[in-house]
Structures are given as structure tokens and as C-alpha cells.
Image (cartoon, rainbow, N blue to C red; front, side, top):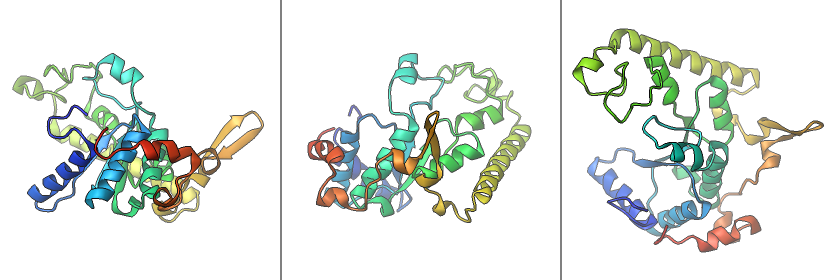
Length: 248
């Protein structure tokens, strides 16, 4: 709530509308790491009240990070991606907004199986940051915010930038991206899936004890379209009632 441009969910939504207008209609959205379900529901209420929704929302997991983050933030704050992604997906479904907003998932996404898993949990697409930086040659020296990156990835220093051979590194990034997407495609083919839209939580399994395996469809609650606008389920009722579009 300490942004210089907005301080309430309603102001956030109006800011997005203004950005879209200034950008000539280009897609606008925001990225967040879920901290409170009530706060995200407040954003959903603001979308409904203003008749404005972002084109996309990127959900980052607590397991994501940057070399510029304080250790306390990187290790102790935020909701893990699985829970955060399912929360955002459910909130948008429950408020009837899901068809208007694309959901991206980021935070530790590095392999084809990571992509398939996040799509099955409700994402429309995934982002990769750390893995792409590794493909560029990142050594995790954790100097991203100091302008002294030793391999030229996170710096504007002309001398250090020379360490980044664009021709060589771009080929590496391309090979990594191509191999990762191919891996995800092969996994989906092995599952009998012809289109990513066919993926769902029933296809993800977790062993809960030595003798029991349950699907994510069984482990998590999945809301029906518009249910929060009619009668919120008991497990969501308190957060839905407490959500205020004019206060985080």
C-alpha cells in the first residue's frame, strides 16, 4: 500500500486504466506475490466496481527472488507459488473475472515440468527469470543492485557489459528456451493432452502419506464461476466480507 501512485485497490485499478489509455490500448497488468487473500479480493471488488480489469496478472511465488532482495524478504515473506496461483485463479473465477484476465506464473519456473505444473494449477502462461539469467551466464554473485555484476548481465557499466557476448549468449538463451518448451510439449503429449487448455488440477498428484495419493482437484478447493457474487463458500466468506475496494 506504499506506492507513490496509488494507495487503495480502487486507485490501483484506475491507474491501470490510465496506463492503458496512455499506451494506446496496449495490454496492461501487474505482478504480485500474494500476501493476503483478503487484499486480493479487495482488488477484485475494485475491478467490479470500476468496470476495469487488467489484461494480465503475473503471480510470483515466495520461492522467486532477486539478488537485490534483502535476505529477510527473500526468505520469509510471501505465499509460495502453488498457493498464491490457486488463490488468484479462484478469486477471479469466483468473481466472474477469470475470462477477462490472463494469469502468468513465475518463481522457480525453469523446466518443462515446471511449466506443465503451473498451467495445470490455473496459469495461462509462465515466466522464467532466474533460469534465463543462468543461460546468460549469471553466477549469482548477488550484486544486481550495485552495478558491479562480474559477468555483465545486471550492469550498465560499459566496461563490465563487455563481458556479455551478445552473439554467444543469445544463442544459449535461444537453445535453453527451445529445449524447455520442447520438454513441456513432450510431457503434455505423454499425458495425452493436445492443448495446454486441457490441463487441470485433476492431473497433478501428491502423495499425502505412504498409502495415499490425491490429486490437486481433491487437495484444494476450486470455486465455481461467479460463486462469490452469489453466496460465498464458508471457507471464503470472512475474507470476502472483509475485502474493501478502498483499503488494502
